Length: 308
Image 1 (tube, rainbow, N blue to C red):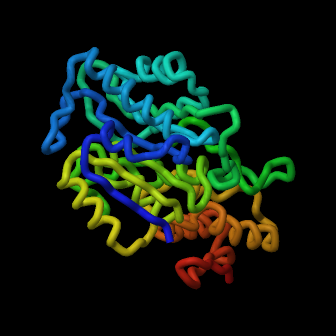
Image 2 (spheres, helix red, strand yellow; image 1 turned 30 degrees about the vertical axis):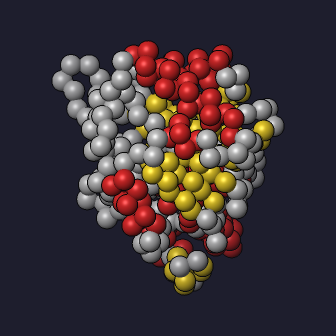
Image 3 (cartoon, rainbow, N blue to C red; image 1 turned 90 degrees about the vertical axis):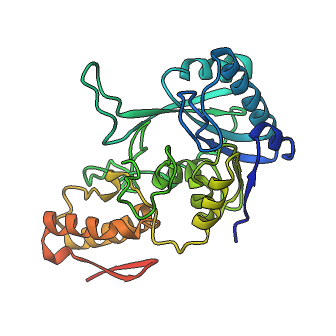
């Protein structure tokens, strides 16, 4: 069983408790310095103070990462170029990817274009890093012999909806991230029983995802109310992650042969929706709409799906 630990305090101070080279993966959504109110602290520093703070915690992040480790950092547009510069030029980490998280709804603007994405920088401690492509593939559009029907690389533009206020999993936190988004990072860049660190734990999404994916995890959080929120969240039963890449529900074209279709559909559930029981009905409807009732999927058990 995964060991999940949430610690209350200042991230830079708490980093001192983590041994050098002991963490497999760091995923974090630090303050963007945009003036958000986080209860007992206000996200607003002088420009140079914020950059110094960022460099300080990133230096600690590099120290605790294993040589094969990976770092995912969310960042707003105002500071992302500075963040990149610190990671590459000051800390000599290895650039991996610049992921764009496209969310489907956001703040409206009447002058200028409304923002519809967040940026996520991905850097590695060395050129020898963990990347489990088979764990994060997305379904192909077509069933073709030349295609890998285990799925395609998801690319660097990811679509996940925000955790809307009507979602039962919505927490009282201003920047809660979707579980499916974090799931992809954890599956891609760590192994089971590895150690994941989130130094700005917030609503506890990284810890909740690690709990379900059998990863050990440590979270730092300065607000005791959010620590209590996370502890409550970790105690709840699991009914599937609160978000899914819409491509996971995609049914490939050209599955007309019943034997080929049945085998693929059984694999599809196991490959792409194993942590998303709440998305299986949507996928089953898409199958019926495309191939008729003879291709219906029946849910047998939460962890097992059968065709009839």
